[in-house]
Image (cartoon, rainbow, N blue to C red; front, side, top):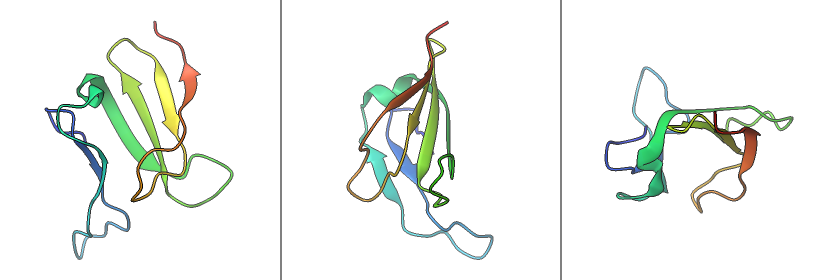
Length: 82
């Protein structure tokens, strides 16, 4: 979930039964306020659903593989700004 102020959180293990504890990926007032689409899932060869893909307002797309409670670790640019 990317909030209007840039705070971004993920909810690992989300089911229709309950809302799990959140992991805060970015704090409020972060540069992620410029993200237009944020999605989490398993997008790498590691099948764990711990990756985040972001499309930014300038059109470039980033992959952040292997996020966890310690935050983001790496950014891979998938597409340049348009």
